[in-house]
Length: 113
Image (cartoon, rainbow, N blue to C red; front, top):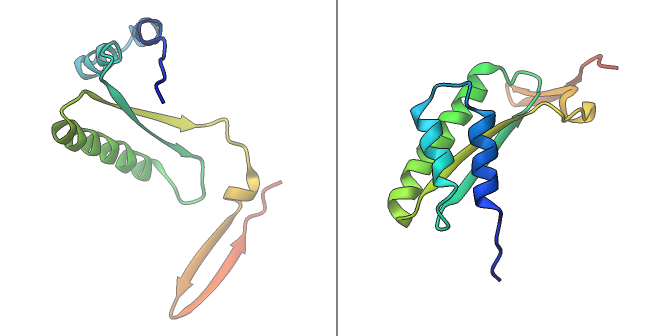
């Protein structure tokens, strides 16, 4: 099955949107969108209990490293895409913490309303 996407329009939009940020790597990745051979690795992070900024940074670095590896293996441009899923307001997914301690586990519910 062959699919096509408006790569030029997406690259133009991303370029205009990110123009205020000075990043050579970002500009290079946006230009890769124009290449019909390119693929994307998309990852993100939603809000969560105990999932602080270090975890988010770790995920971003992991995606970048994965992309570098796949680009050399596949021989095509691979573009990292990361988003913070701030629109995810599913309280049932983030209102608990499961912890395991000394061969026992328990679950604590947060008082989120």
